[in-house]
Amino acid sequence: RPRPATEIKPPKKIIDIERELLSLIMNHPDHIDTVREKIVKEDFQERSLGEIYSLILTIYNVQGTVSEGILIDMLEDKEAEAEISSLVQIDWHGQNIPLTVKDYIRKILYFKRERIIDRLKGELKIAEEKGDLEKSKQLTAELTGLISRRQE
Image 1 (tube, rainbow, N blue to C red):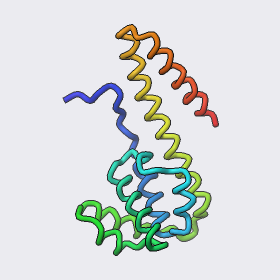
Image 2: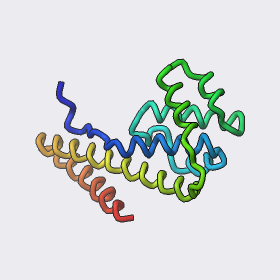
Image 3: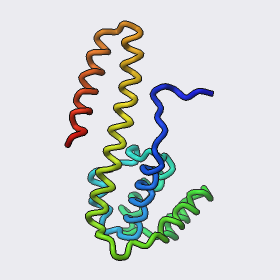
Image 4: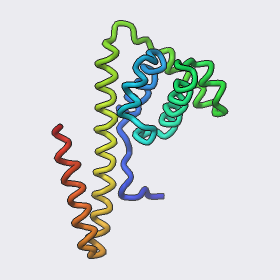
């Protein structure tokens, strides 16, 4: 069945970035506050990773730290359990963790903005086809603002 025109397939790279960001905050929970200030669950392209992120934040809020065991105990999904186990095994030794976290946040927000731009372009096309001038103007203004922020 064909996908709606407003749905875009994410590049594999963004999913890898999302996974690695989760790995970073699981292995270095002292950076969770930095991530939480900028990223929300809905910013994740991969919904299952957004759910894991949300669970990490919940556990961190209660426990003050995050562990693989607590995360797995709270899950019923075997695929998510395997995902978490693989995330904690990534070795971050020798990495500049603060810089990497900031870079991943920037990339996730960039791809989120691109998804919104693609969705708005689809909505604009529909509004133009329907002859809805007011909606077209509104969507064009939103698109212009988002596209101008690409350079930031």
